[in-house]
Image (cartoon, rainbow, N blue to C red; front, side, top):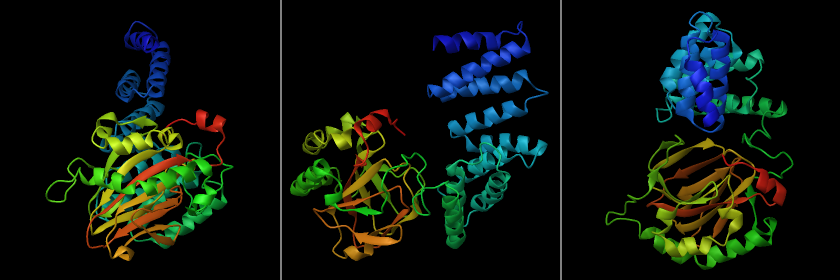
Length: 376
C-alpha cells in the first residue's frame, strides 16, 4: 500500500510531466488490481482518462475493465461504446462490450434484449483473433447467451469448434481455470476417488441424518429457509434455489458453523474438502418449480460431492444432468460429479430438495499442485 500511495501522489501532482504522471497512475492501477483493491484501482483508471483527454483510447479500456471489476456493467458498456465509436472493429473492445452487455441481464427473461445484443459483440470480437479475445470466458458467455435464447444447437456447434481449437477441454467440459493433465469425466464412483475421499463418503453416509437434522433446524415454521442465501450467479431460469455456506475457498464460515456444530465438527477432519481453495462446502435447498440453466463450474481441479438429505418421493422429477447424462439424488447417498462439465437441474418434485455439497481436490493432483493452486 505504501508503494500505491507514492505512485498515487505522483499521479495527482500536476507539476510533473504527463508521461511521468501516466506511468505512476498505471503502476498504482496495476498494483491495486493485483491486491484486489478494485475501488482504488477504479480511481486511478479515472485519473488516467482525465489526465489524457485528447489521447485516452487505451486508458478508456482500463476504465472499462475497472467498471467491470466493480460490477458497474452499465457504465462499462458506456465506456466500451466510446471505444467502439472510434473503432467499431476493435476485437478486444467488442468481447468486453459483449461481456458488459450480457452481465446486465443475469436475472432477465430467456428472450431478453440483452442476450441478443451481446451476440454481435462476441462474434465480431472473437473473429478478429486479436490478442485478448482468445480467452475461453468470451466463448463461454457467447454460448450461454445462445442457450438462454433457445439456440442450443448453435451453442453446441460453437462449443465444439472451440474445443477443437483448444479453447475448451471438450465440448462439455468448459471450465476456465484448469490443470491440463487431469482426467475428466461427468460422474465418478467412490472407487475412483482414492481411499481418503472414500472414507469421507462412508462417514457422510453413516452420519447423514445428523447432517440433515441440523440443516432442517435452520428451517422456519413455514418450511422456508430464511438463513439461506439466494443463488446469486444468475444460474436459475426460474424457481427458488438457496445455499448456506460452511466453507468457501478453504476458509470456514465460523458464524454459520456455530448453527450446525455437529456437521462442521465432522467435516473439519476432511481436509481434502476444507482445504480445497477452489471449492465450497454448503447446504443447498431447491424448491419445486426450479430450473437451472446448463452451466459449468470454473475449474477442473475439484470434484463435487452431493449428499442427499431430503429428496421427494417422486425423485425422478428432481434430476441432475451432466454432459447429457441424467442421475437422481437418494437420501443418505453421495452422488459425485465433475462440475467443470456442463450440468443443469430440473426440479418438478412435490416438495423441496435438500443436499449437502462438498467439493474435494481432484484425486490426480499432487501435493505440490494443490499448494500452488490459487483460490478463485
